[in-house]
Length: 310
Length: 263
Image (cartoon, rainbow over all chains, first blue to last red; front, side, top):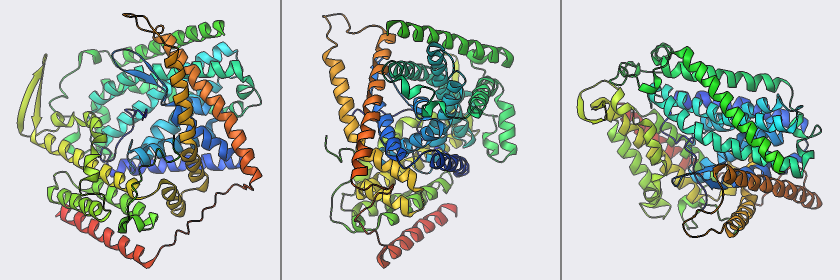
């Protein structure tokens, strides 16, 4: 089968019970909210639509393109689902996709499914939609560029939260897991951004009504801009801090009772500073922001190129 | 592609197959929670939990090693836990160096690493068994009985029902791309990475439109057959007294394993 697992699906056993339960409660409350919002806004007509769209995201993840050295890029779909279906429906669709991946393919565990849904479904949809919505009245070019940034950041957000959950469960060390996860997903996110942008460009060319002012996509409230923007900002500011000052975070986590004494930082690796982490936190925040601007500019240019050829 | 191409169900006449799906879902979840609660290095409890799994395999008539053979799917993820080998203070049991770093594996770190892997491995196996002895539509139904909101189970039911249709659609798209990607010897077909990404994106957009338009047709067809927002099934899904006994018995065993693990 062309089904390719994504490295962000946490299996059972890697998160502690406390972290799993907290994630389940968070996810369940957000899903509950999404259900009541979609029930209010949409009729029974939407349920088959959301079901087919969930199957679409699942199937679209099988479309890959070769990158280099045998690796391939493919879609995760959280941002795309939220942009074309609206945020709440997008969240429900992603929840269904991740639930089936865990249940049927054991790609992601059951007890940790709350965490997987939160990381890859709810947050990616919120960040993806919120950032996209901030540009929804602009020209298509800007819209597509912002959608690319949104898709990239949505993947990074998921990766950061996954790292934090693994660390709080005592499964990974903060100063290793954050650079590793964010590094890998910066690339995966590029693939995600490129596919999302070109898919949206294709939809804008062929069925512009689906993304126009009357569509579900434009109906999400302006509050989403704040939600998406704030989460994205938190990710940009927090990731460099977390990887340069893990001791402080370790202390906070130990105080909150998450980590045993054995985990609070004093290991053989704690003394090392990996060479690529040797920036000051301020410098790293700056680097993060510059990185995002660069990625955004690249995506804008690509989007423009695609528009021109259309 | 056949409609149940994705189902991992293994048709067998067995005691476990005949149990109500709710029983299997509840026991699976309790088993996984119990694994998460077992302390590091509870070897005896880990072995007993594994015996529980082997028994379940046997009772399902799938062969003792059925889940064992398929249980390595979560293994690549073990990489993410590798840092605990070095980060937990303890007696050194081995070391190696890469470039300028010297990595020391501690006994406490090794204990934790192995415990994480065993927990994950046991949990994956019971989840594998669950889908092997329960048809996926029955599974969805069980979740509905267990108070998962109907809108979610309905979306999942649609996802499952149309996944094979859209997968066929994806295969057609991939085949079309392949058949147009001819290349001369020594030269890779297709353009640069950006170009390839754009083609993949266009294919995703195309798949989206086909799915979107198909969902309209499906909805209209359903309306014409009297769809009101609920899916009905002929399967009665009644809990018999046997189902209650089995649930209680299985949970009792898991509880005992948990107690032994905490001694």
